[in-house]
Length: 389
Image 1 (cartoon, rainbow, N blue to C red):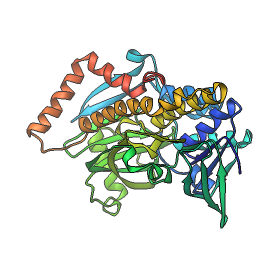
Image 2 (cartoon, one colour; image 1 turned 180 degrees about the horizontal axis):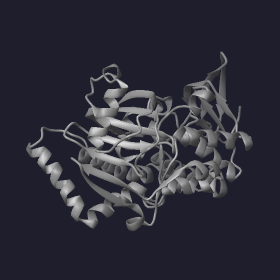
Image 3 (cartoon, one colour; image 1 turned 90 degrees about the vertical axis):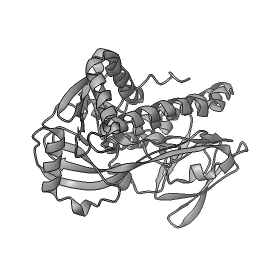
């Protein structure tokens, strides 16, 4: 099997890359370890930056997004019952859109199918060879057969546990990570949201987040210990704790998904080697407090597509050679913001301690400083895609 760009992973980054290339007549093939049903129902992020929506608009894959997505012009940050709204529209003239990642993936897969971009599901990448040559190879298995994609470039969009990062020489990058001392208990529920925008809430019992996926489905989170277990949390206990921490009355509907997710930051400072390029979770993970995972992946792909298009149109490799530099600068900005939001909103020390009073001081400053509010707003809605070029 021969193509211009071999892509490993049919998540948002791999699918977006294929569609951006197809617009310029550049062929690609996507292989995906999981089934189509699995990737189309894998619940992940649900908030799209203004820039991400613009990318999907340019790809003409956003019709359902605009019909079903919920546009938010701000969010709330609460501290022990005191609420401060962050006005995105006022400070940035931009907004964010609530639209589940699984819905994004469905739209992108349908577009790939309609535009005859091959996606091979249940195909496990086994080895990436010859990335330092002009003819890389992706060796994979599909339906019990061993197969090969011969290509000019490889897009490693296969997630944190994928093959792409493991293929980079260990001495070609530095690794940075933080394991936070708390996790998120998250639920999805058939519950009509009783709030109009996201609420980030610090409480003496711990953090809570009120998010949503639609006008009928709520996505809510509680800070829990890393060694906690979902069996310790009945639906009634979860709803009661959410109402206490958020300080609002909730529609206590049927909970249809419940899970605990550890909080972590991870990144490497080089996302390319030879003709292998990493994007999205294969190169970096951010805590979900900043709502940046999917958006950061799309920003990576914007840079990678620019480089590949420039190469095929003019032969220039300048943008490809600078790919890591451009991406990593944005990743550090996003890591900082996600870390800031995580430490601002989560309980880390006993009430009345030095650490907790510093945390309260930050929130008090947020309530009086428009400059502080603007800083959060412009980071939250996302910087233009070429800011770090």
